[in-house]
Image (cartoon, rainbow, N blue to C red; front, top):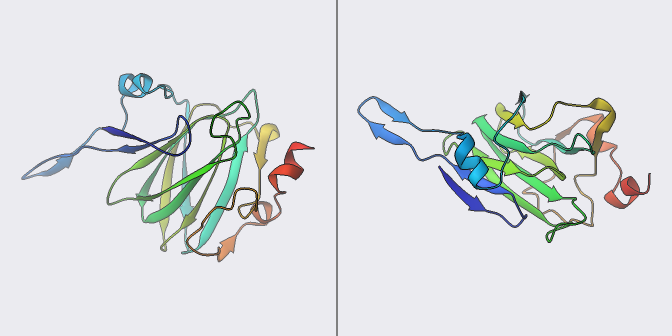
Length: 180
């Protein structure tokens, strides 16, 4: 595996390093020791799948508040998405910055997102599926969200979403969220 730093402190693009032969290929996608060596979680007690039927589906920007702030390892198992992390950690050197990567099933790349960051994505084709490793159990009462188009972050999405859930569309701006 290769760990490529992003614009967000502690966030990495994780690339598989497949070994190929006449049968096909084989690659590790997670190794506790290698993740720990990068300062990433080496234990993920929860995994989830997100299925998205239509190109232009937006989910996010989601995060969990302390004490259940969760790190995520996000991988696409079908299709292609524009995956975004926004640093909401006030003590971070990259506070309020964002990073994005195109994740797709062909490359088998992933994005490791530190706890304290918001996450969202936009599907770039129909029938996308994502597989998440989560460092904490989901706590609905600590779930938070901010607007995908918050001008404070000025995320350069490839295009405006076509499908967005009511909850995601109603999220406040970050400045409104932190004063609640």
